Length: 155
Image (tube, rainbow, N blue to C red; front, side):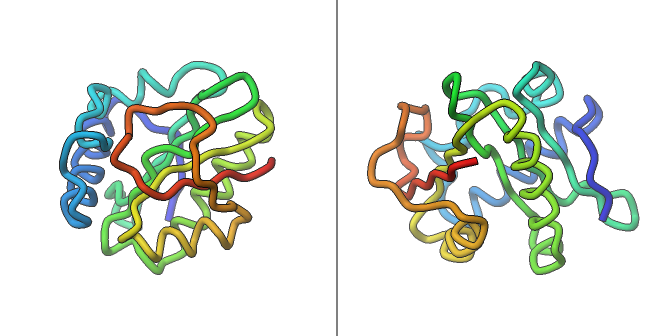
C-alpha cells in the first residue's frame, strides 16, 4: 500500500468509498457523513494547517481507503472519514493510515475525537487498540448526530 495526501483527482473516488461504506453499514441517511456537503472536495477542505486527508492506494494504484484529521477546537481534532473498501480491510492499511493521522495530529492538538456507529464493532476494537477511550458525550457538537458511539484519545 502507498499512503499519500489527497489530490484533487481523488475527490470523487473518496466520496464513492465513503458512500459505499456508509450504505454497507446502514448509515446512508441524515446525521451522518452521507449528507456532508464537502464529500466531493476533500482536497480543498483538508488543505489548511491542522487539517489533512490521506488516501491509500493498492499495488495497482487504485485508491481503496482514506482518513483525515480535522479541526474541532484549539485543542481537539477529529479523526474523520476513515473508511476502507472491503478489499483493503485486514491488509494493515488502516493501521498505517491511523498512525499517519495521529502523528500529524500530535503537532497541532492535545486530544483526538472520533464518532462511529454501534454496529461497526471492528472499527470500535480498532480505535480502542490505538488508545481511544469511549465517552458518552461529545466534547463539541458535530453535524453527525446519528453517530451513537464516541471516543477520545489524549495525544
